[in-house]
Image (tube, rainbow, N blue to C red; front, side, top):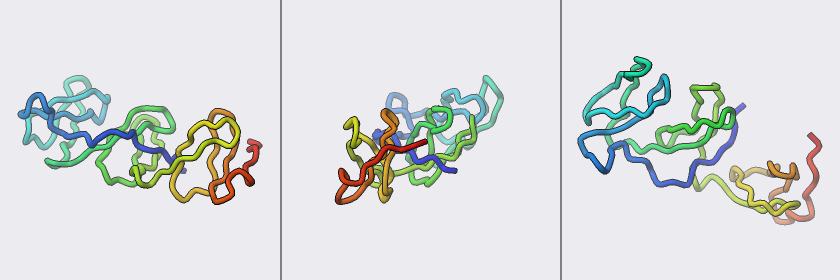
Length: 145
């Protein structure tokens, strides 16, 4: 089952390093090390694990999120709707900033982020479920799980 997570609120990650315009970087598909490669390459062979990683087309904007299964930082092409973690194989929903909303927990007042359109959100701190809607405070309840 997909795990809804919001992306880090960071600007798009350019593939080209600002310090050195002749090199770009990507994450190895095998060992997850950061690889530097010359601009124009179509694939990169990792010196550590020998995995060959395909290079995205020039100008591709990248985004990142934390896997809901193993908490590994994942990079993906901006615009993807889901991202499968190569470590634990969890399928994570990749939500754009305009697809998430915020509400304060009805019990501990912690700021919670949830997928736009959800009917309720469970607080990870106190386990309270806050209903989303016009009369939020009247419909909050404890979650028994």
